[in-house]
Amino acid sequence: MENRPGINYTTLFLAIVILKIMLVRFVIFHKVEIYHTFIAEIGFVLIVGVLIESLPRIMRKIGVLTANFMFSLILFSTLIYNDFYGTIPTYQSLAHVGQLGAIFETIKAFFNPIYFTLFLDIFVLIIMMVMNKELFMPKFKMKRLYQYTLLMCSLLLIFGNTYIVHSEDIKNEKVLVEKMGISNYQLYSAIKTHTKETVEVSSFTNEKVNGIKGLDKAYPKKWLGIAKNKNLIILQLESFENALVGLKIDGIEITPNLNKLAKENLYFPNFYQQVGIGNTSDAEFAVNTSLYPFGPNAMADTFGNRDIPSLPKLLSKFGYRSATFHTNDITFWNRDEMYPMALGFEKAYDKKFFGDKDPIAFGSNDEILYAKTLEELSKYQKEGKRFYAQLISMSSHSPFIIPVEKQKLRIGRKYDGTMFGDYVKAAHYADFALGQFISGLKEKGLWDTSLFVIYGDHSGVQSTKEIDMKLMKEAFGRERLPHEKFNVPLVIVSPWNKEGQIIDIVGSQVDIFPTVANLLGVSADGQTYMGQDLVNSKSNTVGIRFYLPTGSFINNDVVFIPGTKFEDGTAYSLKTKRKVQHSLYKAEYDKVINLYDLSDKYVETIPLSKK
Picture 1 (cartoon, rainbow, N blue to C red):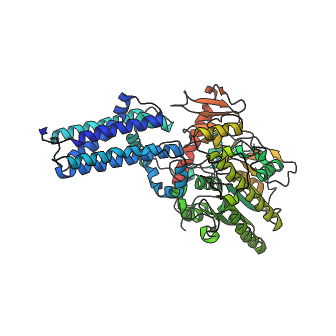
Picture 2: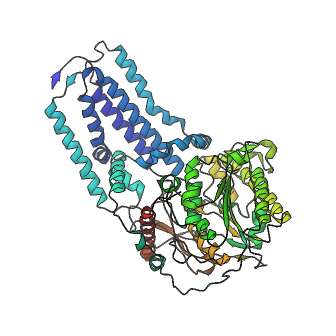
Picture 3: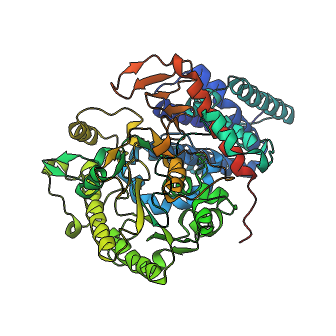
């Protein structure tokens, strides 16, 4: 190496970035193994360092600052993403950065300002560089031979470490990142995405799905066509957890209208979300296609332009018109493509239709959503055509800010200024608006002519603050298990079942499609779907991924969450909430993995829409 006066900022850059990575790993994984961290992370950082050293002298310090800033930004984003979603982002997740502005208030509610310290050293480096007389003169210049040698060693380290970890067949994404390294995981994700096998769409059939599930082809058809020729109204409640149903705080019911519906109709208390990064839009996708969202890819963005078999397309064959109602901008999460192409809705009503009056979250409040939707549904009714209408409520969206004049819930002051307190107030208002919608349906003669389905899209409170955790424990009577926040309500209004009925079978959003098809008496024969009819099933296995490690599942007896693999996973009894022996459930674990694999491959084979 050729000695020169000045400071070697490239070496300083390497040391600082490795230190930052160690700090981020400590926050995410709650531990730092220095030797393992060095092996897993140093390769990519060294490559960047070599590239900086290969720049002309006048550009090296600019290279150091730029690379430092980019590493800091990636690590900063990783921390925020982990806080919000509970998992590690892939390079594919960066495609959704444009959506973050819309959920800024939500992110701000739990954001930790200490994360900004990742950028502080950049200002110190700038000052050091300005004060250094030999501004563009590093201490040494690495010879080309050394650069090439170090580059090759770094590449071997990256690919070797990635291959070794990959060969362990780890399903838990966080464990995979911990072992593989944050940067190496991005490379692994890219290679995995672009080396998927091509499979013919004709090879995916419902017989294949039922074979994996072990379903009997001849299972009974209870209530087949009991709602034949009725309209279909499906309401998706924003951020509604099942824990809200029946919940009282200070003696006041949080969701009195939903409670009444659950008591008098078909209520599924063991129903779970099936969403990935797309959250609300992923729930819409799962319900209307009965296919599993990918996880790190929002289905609306990735497959919104595909000609996917769906509930609106199926019902159109039976004379139904279809429309979706959402007060947000239709371009959010690429719904302007997903609605007409992937899902097949004939018409979509969004912010342009509902306006900006009395906004909550991203658009007009739920009262306006329901009032203006009722006007349109009444027009459909008068035209004499059956319809399928999906409504997406939004007033209970995080960060759960309800205007004072709209707040209907009066509870103790200890809830003021807390996320949990704001959450139950938002849910109470959303339930109040739901009550108005029900009254409107009855007044306009739509209640008795429609099959009405209500479900929650995804979990609600994400705060880990001590005060919120304490208030939730008081409200629910105990600390909740990891899977319980993914438990959302499902209620199917059933006038044919006068006394109401609790159906305990485990279910998820992909099961709504086949359940509704059975009740309406429309045949989905020849259409591939991953769900099953909940009113005609004795057992079910629901996989949850993205928010839990891949391979996590819930069946009628237990919830299972893998560790590094199945063997070191943990199972809890749904009845006792206590740990149980999980080794008996390997077949269930394999079933979930196979179903996800089948669904993923199937949706990738579906051709582009011609619309």
